[in-house]
Image (cartoon, rainbow, N blue to C red):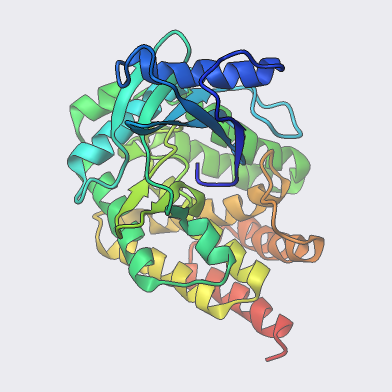
Length: 352
């Protein structure tokens, strides 16, 4: 949501030359439909770039700015990837829960949801906002941010564990199957048939062990760092009542991959910090082995699944394949072993 923005127009008129631009303006009009601005208030619409699952626009008026998000039926990736558009409503419900129940309200407010157009209107973080992924890829490591991210996730999981109302609202995990288990693990299993038994086991415990609310896309690109020092979690359209190990593995995986990409031991230390902080603040220590197995599976899935990480070189991809395949095959459950393997490769690359 805070990637490069393409300004389509600053005009208040809605006559556009291309259908895509007309669609953007129709999304902008949701702010008016929500009653947030007067009927004749001019507005400016800018399209956010970079997302694969939704169309996201920023709507500005002299009264304020809002983000409008609409779910796509087909995700914008190379492989065919379809998903139920009703996932936007799970996202709205999850954002409201994070905003209302987690310390310091670490999520944007929800102003409106459109059940017909599969869209919602959200609070805007501000022009000085950036996402955690941008910082990490530029070499910026801030342990205070890492600890806060891990603590938010631990609180999110702990406060929803066994909550019957949350369980009922988020029990349907269709989105998780479509957007994660099928697109990541099943696709990876097809491309690595020797690992099918191990990857199927991971998919089974992720789908069948229903313990608390799971974000489903808890990654650095979805952690916003606001100008006033606050932190927001966004993009939870894969939210479901499930196994918490997915979220901690998903986020830690991104730190691991960036450490390999940048040959950075400090980034690897942040992965260790994320991991240790999370487990020290939850009651799920008995699940850590499953979390390590999930992490190794996701390492390979972000190379050979339907949504490969865009910043890794071919050489770096092969490093990830080598490490993850070995650990998946062995059904490794030790984070220290995984981190040690990554650290060894980084030191070799750095000539240490």
